[in-house]
Image (cartoon, rainbow, N blue to C red):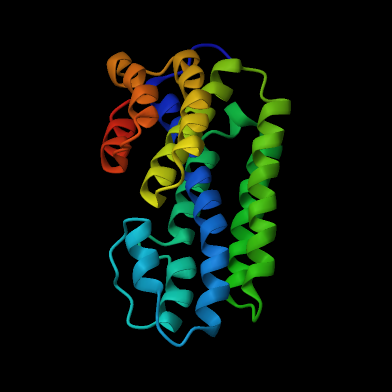
Length: 220
């Protein structure tokens, strides 16, 4: 596809990050949704704390409605999906119309979920369409560099989210091992020192989740 501009590279990187943010957030939101429906003591505060977002909600009902579907809330799932779509639109020539169409379908799924009595069904379709986007990107984007820029963003975002959610050290080690070669092959400007330190950081028995978040955010 020729030379990739700095602006294009930024859009590709953030397309990877935002699609991953929506995907991982929904994966962890699903079990929380089920438990919140039946609980007598609100636990949405703990969910907000676990993903490091401000608790602006007045009740679990308010959380279950606004956190996924409030486009005016910058931390909502729909806001992150809209950002993914905005990046995908300007990248149509780079990623192809079919890849873009799966992001569009995910946006439609979110709109349907917002008015549904069973929103998890539509939200599962949304997850499926994000997975389809990644699959078609692998299959139909000819430029390896374009694919690697998207995946570098995706892998960095996953480590960021997993560290915030305090997943196991083994999971983080696995994700760091997948992230490092993507960043190295992406052509993006990155901090070689911080990238080299990531594996040692997550392998430490006394894993510092907060440092993991700050260091992975500083790689690109």
